[in-house]
Length: 254
Image (cartoon, rainbow, N blue to C red):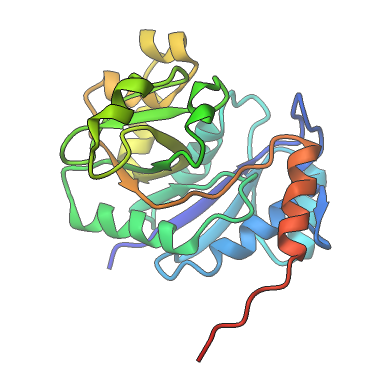
């Protein structure tokens, strides 16, 4: 069976949260939480942390991760992932996993790989879920996606799409207002082609690189889930997450 690799692109500098990957949450660095969740994905044959920072690389080596040192010139995580994937010719599928989503669901990773294996006409698979609070759909920091009748992406935007008030009145069997979750599954060849393309007009207008794929005619399938995993963008987010992880888990009733 064709193999899949999960690659976690990580950098040290963050405008709102410098050093975020190694910030300790519930006794472990944020990045280690992400890496450990990925190890539970049954369809991944390997998990690699891709970084240009020796502080991150050294810490990841200490907890047993495979690390690839990459160029410091990359402008995006996708470019960093592609550098690693270019050398990893033994893998057919490449999953780009965000390094700041410590609650990423391993089952979602597996479903992304299964979709790529079963649908040869799809080159990229990502995920989305309904907003818990529709008010968040108005935030430019939350990326929205609209899909066609076959759950293929029509457009991504920082603006609220579709018109939120209209979608409330439609009474659809499911929400039309979807929050995009930044996880991507690529066919390796599609990823290597993607990073060769120049930024496109809509991509520049929205500051969303996934629009480059749509503008070049690539089919991007969206797996719609009930909920998503929150990202950690600020120290405040990290504290909220730590409180969540510290809560005792409920015992299942037999």
